[in-house]
Image (cartoon, rainbow, N blue to C red; front, top):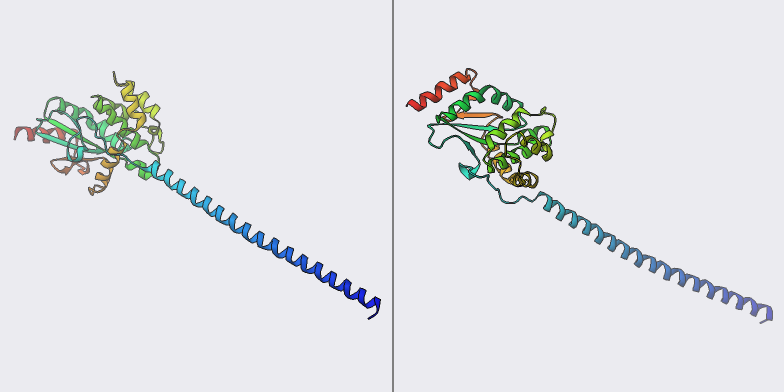
Length: 258
């Protein structure tokens, strides 16, 4: 074999060796990339799972509701009624109401003088049930916040006065003004002696929120169609087109004579 041929074969072997070495290096890098990518995918998946788990925990915490705390003196099934008037009154008016409800405000404006007169005379007791119908229909949380604040006023023995102040200052149905606890506390200033540290804490903490939710659930399952629902002797007098304050007074006085 000539010297030239030997050099050619040697050069060919060297090139082949170099090429094989390059291929081995490339294969090693490819495997490293695959392993690295797998690790990254696992870590990314773990991160996503962690975020989802944390989010789920946060949602659970934010929507968790404690036990329903009834306001002081609440009566009826599950303590869902706030009574106004003497226990010995022969007539009971049951009112399901929403502080954001315009129809409730209209009813209060027209019937309040007569109702208060009958209550003061010991002939009528009113049981108020607070619901959040407008929150569900219009959005927002003003119905719930106002109901909680009213329950806090009941704890202070000033429900009736604060109840009237809320209706006298009711915002438009589309405005969620009562969602602002500061506004509710400001309005409470119109009731002598109501604004105390205890009342403020009760309003700001939403102490009776779960109770309000339970009251609203009772309304939803009752079959009533809307607010206000006003029952006298089990009959919805608000649905009676012939009803007037004078007629309500006659009905109550007749019950007291019976």
